[in-house]
Image 1 (cartoon, rainbow, N blue to C red):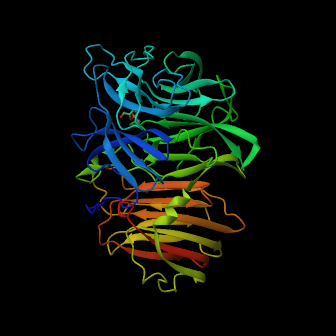
Image 2: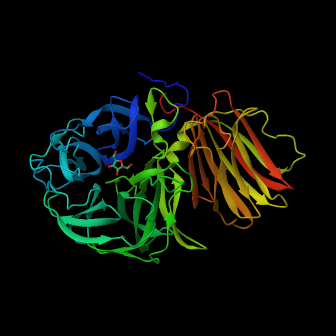
Image 3: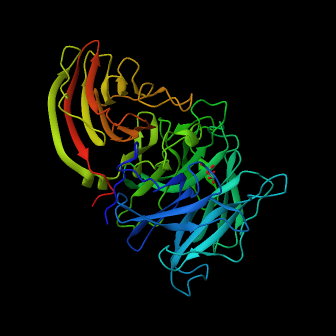
Length: 493
Ligand code: FRU
């Protein structure tokens, strides 16, 4: 039966739990025709609490079926973030010579009398496509090493060394372990204590290889590391990445240790990691993040549920004028949500042009636009507009900066850090700027210049704020093309 979600602010084409609190995506794995998405879940309240793994499956990463809770707290503690893999050759012995799913996650002490709550790594396995799970009797499989923050294992199979590899967050760095059977782990190396951003505790790492500019003869390894909320840091939770090499035990960063690469220049893309076991014939590196920020995650103005995931994205490595960077593009499956298309071409936008989009209204839609720079100093879109509210997505030509301004985007009073404008350098290409924008009932995602720069932001506009406007300041900008697509809800068939 079809399920429609119509509560105020409820995302129409982003994953949300039916009710209650969600944070990080966990255990993403593809197995027997299904993408699994587990997530940090508190089933009894809309604020963070004793963590469980919620669960959903999808055939296309767009339409999700909610399943019962997969993992619940036990005598070893609450179930923090982690990953899942297909154990194809029964290296664990859990599957009687067959194959099945193994989850590798952090057991976090909940009711510890010890001064320092322990975080230890554990296993659970499923023989029935993730529908039911057994806790491994030998848990925990990797005990803490007197580091309080010791969590979020991401496991993958390393083909060259024929070993399982685990990357784990450990305070201000990551640690790498290797194993033959997923049960016994040997320390291999550590990385990062003097590197990158240290503006918060390191969390939710990932490590994988990608071709540069699509060329398989030139591959590099990418490490993703999320950085927790530090009170001193206005941006709150963010995700950084490193590019380099990995030989099965050691990661070598090819940039200087001062270099910081941000995955997203918005405020609401955190703790994201990638899917395991995506079939080779697909070959994409698929990513999803938690669309919130620990600065205000517990206070956002929703009632029945709290938090959504970002859109699923494909990650690639591309050569830019600054060097090799991650590009993020929304998965092409999203095109199946498009309703009618309204097209515009060759329009000069300036202060004298009456709003060319005045006939368009929208709460959940996609925009694909290309602008050729002329005399205007700033241009862009105002979305989710009314007399009192607007979210501005713009480009400052003089400063070469893309920005989102959510200061008057709607409800912002729940936390002083929420109302803000942020920006990031974006070089025009052939004097042009491209924007692909997804607007939902409580978010905007901007993929600029084919995903070379991405900004993901929550917004909480009134449901009647549905206006859309193009603007240009101090002169002209040439809109070479614009496609507007109303989008269907992913919860209807
Ligand atoms: C990241 C995080 C993880 C931890 C989980 C607890 O948002 O802090 O490091 O495992 O959330 O819910």
